[in-house]
Length: 178
Image 1 (cartoon, rainbow, N blue to C red):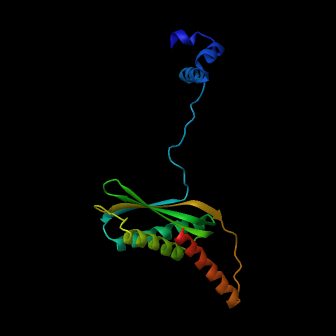
Image 2 (image 1 turned 180 degrees about the horizontal axis):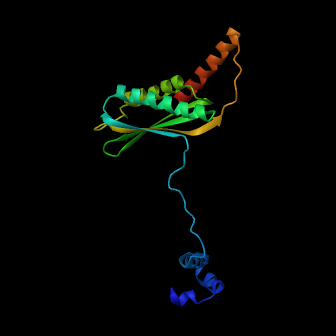
Image 3 (image 1 turned 30 degrees about the horizontal axis):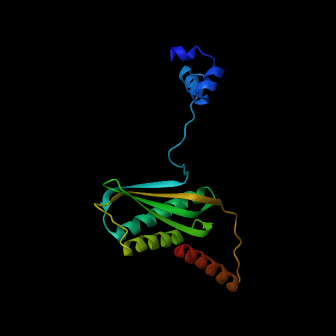
């Protein structure tokens, strides 16, 4: 480093490229190195550590329901709703199973998200893609796609209320088919 450090930066850049000049400046402490995060930062995340590993589909559905309730409470505190939830199931042997549930519009209804996640768990179990190995000891749920929810006016007209309910059902059906 001592021999090339005495050369001018322009000469080094012409001969070896700008990367060498930047590396020398970082080594001297004149330039800071940019940090690239390895994983995407998702601010709305809940982790449930389990005392005993879950070995059954029913246990996963209960853990998914608890996780959905907690993430919806978190979203409610920020006045947000999720359009997609990702349920990560960490097996004891280090394998991560990922289940994704989505909605056509953002909401924070824990009952609805529980239904969506239980449908995903059931679909994976019926398709033989849900291998629990020696069990799941960590359940993580995150909301990568969130939106601020504005106040909604409730309609007292039963026909309009039924139309809203059918729109929600269509959103769930479209997500299930995708």
